Image 1 (cartoon, rainbow, N blue to C red):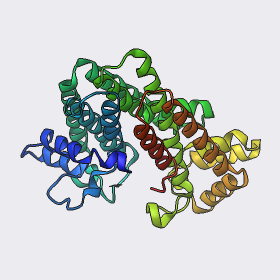
Image 2 (image 1 turned 135 degrees about the vertical axis):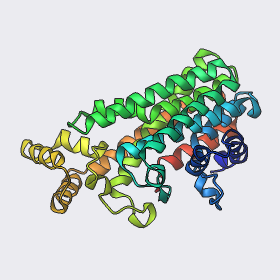
Image 3 (image 1 turned 60 degrees about the vertical axis):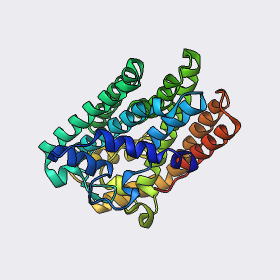
Image 4 (image 1 turned 120 degrees about the horizontal axis):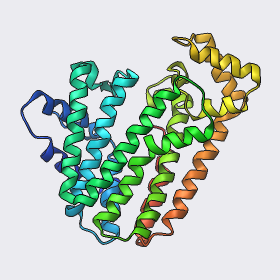
Amino acid sequence: MSLLDRYRRPIEQGLRSVLRGETQLAEILRYHVGLSAEDVTPSKLGKLIRPGLVLFTAEELGGRIDAALPAAVGLELIHGFSLIHDDVQDRDETRRGRPAVWVRWGIAEAINAGDLMHAIGLRTALDAGAGAARTLAEATAEMIEGQSLDLAFEGRFVTVDEYVAMIDRKTGALFRCAFELGGRCAQVGAEVLGKLAEIGANIGRAFQLQDDLLGIWGDGDTIGKPIGSDVRRKKKSYPVVVAYATASESERERLERIYAAATIAEPDAKWVIALLDRLEVADRTCEAVREYSERASKAVGRVSLSDDGKRELLEMIEHLTRRET
């Protein structure tokens, strides 16, 4: 992904600059983002998708990378804070192949670390201007609202429209923010900002639905999870939501009983996976991913990017919505 690779070095340098310090919390933050002393490979930093999109968009629209870097780094830190807290809430024990922060340092310190990363993220974005910081703060609030909705959905089944509205907040907010921050740093007008937000919104939907696919049908050797992993974790992801919407009354009742249990027994997990397969939910989810990917690609054509920039962005959209990890 040449688009993102091009910006890795300045983003890494920016993260190192703002996460300096000798305290345990500073070390926890470096550990979480992949910059602690024990990190010997760049893969621990992750893909840096969102900050890379900030810098790409700013540069393509006539802005300077150095001026946009604080916004990009701030966004990555906000994303990082959300992951620290998500792991606590979901009791996910690993993150990027190693113990999650809460597992290694405890829940209380993980909350502190997430709070501090949130504060540093907004403080960093201020160096890109008050408008950029406000944009990031608004997206952060929207993302947190989405996470709250996701938790609330654990207690009931929801409609497809409700689910999409939730991921528009939880996942889509920061993708929209990435493009909007790039546009603001390039000082584009409101009309262009709206077009950029449309790209981000549709990428966010496609990205999340692809994640939902992988959580059930992803190659276990590739993603490190067995087939049906999200079913066993009782996640009401898009495929399960679609299945509930199209299942018979008796099948819905059984789904409700299964997901109401404290844990899903293996026979019940296999029944759910078989139901999803019979209802061809994977194909429906793939079609939705394609639809949102195509919407994002069409929106790219409505923004004045260079020919190379459009090609790179379209390639990245294709990669994100076809990825296996």
